[in-house]
Every structure is written in C-alpha cells, then in structure tokens.
Image 1 (cartoon, helix red, strand yellow):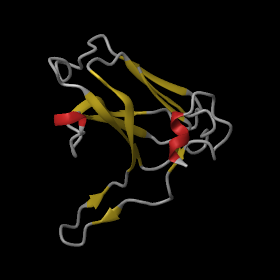
Image 2 (image 1 turned 90 degrees about the horizontal axis):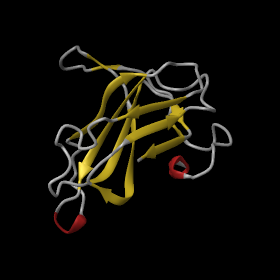
Image 3 (image 1 turned 90 degrees about the vertical axis):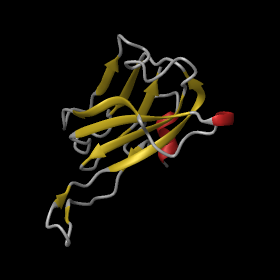
Length: 143
C-alpha cells in the first residue's frame, strides 16, 4: 500500500512503497494533442509546516522502475487546519530523476519558506508527489 512511503525504516522491496500502474500517454480525441501520463500520491503531513528544509525520495528497490521525472507540490492549511483542495505551493518543479539508478534523490532548500510561499501564517498541510510517466519509490521524507 502507498502508506508504506511513510515508514521510518528502509524499504524492503518493490512491494514496500508506492508503485504506479502501467499506462502510457494518450491522444486527446478532440484536440489531437498527446497528453503525457502521470501518476500521483497525496500525503497528509503529521503536522503543518511553516518552513521546509528539504525533501527526499528513496528509489532503492525501483532500479528498473523509477520514474524519469517528478514534481512535488503542497497544499496550505485552510481555516481550522483543513487543507485546500489544490496544490498551489511549488516545492520541487518538474525535475529529471536519473532512471535505473535505485538511488535516493534529495532536494535541500536554502530558502525554507520556498520564496515566501510559506510563513506569515501560511502552513503546508499536504504534499503531492507526481511521477512521469510511471514508476515507483520506497520512501518520501519531508523535513
């Protein structure tokens, strides 16, 4: 199950993490445009964060099945701590991930407010990880 990405121990195998289903890009019949396929997982943080130091994705057991690109976005806590439905906070823009590496991918932030997107009462409540075109990862760490 996808909730395994939050375990505090190293992944045990491909079954221990988030793995997408096999799909491909598709053609929009009305526009004729090829729409790239992506999958995503949404994680509710244990507590809201006004600052974020970095994120990590562990692909250890997805050597031949990690995605080519990832994007990580966040949703702010709304009134009463209820998160918004959208993910307006860009944590990591769509970025290349070295496929077939089985490595841990890190992003550390010098500006812990992500360019003013957080702070002054704006707190991160949810994190959305999108992967292109498909693949998987064992763990997600947000600090």
